[in-house]
Image 1 (cartoon, helix red, strand yellow):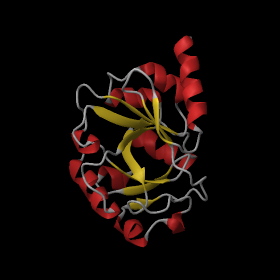
Image 2: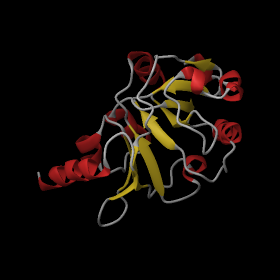
Image 3: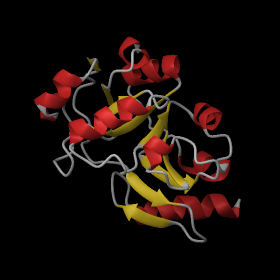
Image 4: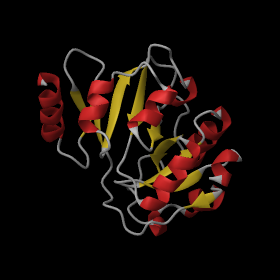
Length: 191
């Protein structure tokens, strides 16, 4: 957590893959992460919190229903961002990707201390997902202020759901089949 507070990128385990993370309030760290990954700064990066309450502290206008239906879990939810918070994470769009993973204890401790981080997979853009620390490219590991090793993770990224339109859409199949995610969402809408 000291590295995050000092404005350094860090590697944290999630419930899916290792994430390259940083302080969401620091635009320069997000730019550094984009450079490390070899991806455009305009590509969105998710906001990750340890629980739904902490997420809503950062983006209070989010619709709570899908958050409560699916989180914590291996999902990235793309939601409307009418206040355009964190433009350096969203590519300036009116949407924001959010995650509340079921975190390993070591990462949960960090999130309890710092509240939220931005997170993207700890790999080179387009490279293989990282389920083990030794799969993270060396140039990323050495550039980080800390690397939290929680052992082997599943290695399949989160399922990404776009909830900005009239009907939810699966943008990326991931740790949970898209049909299962959509069914869980549909069940929560009926309640």
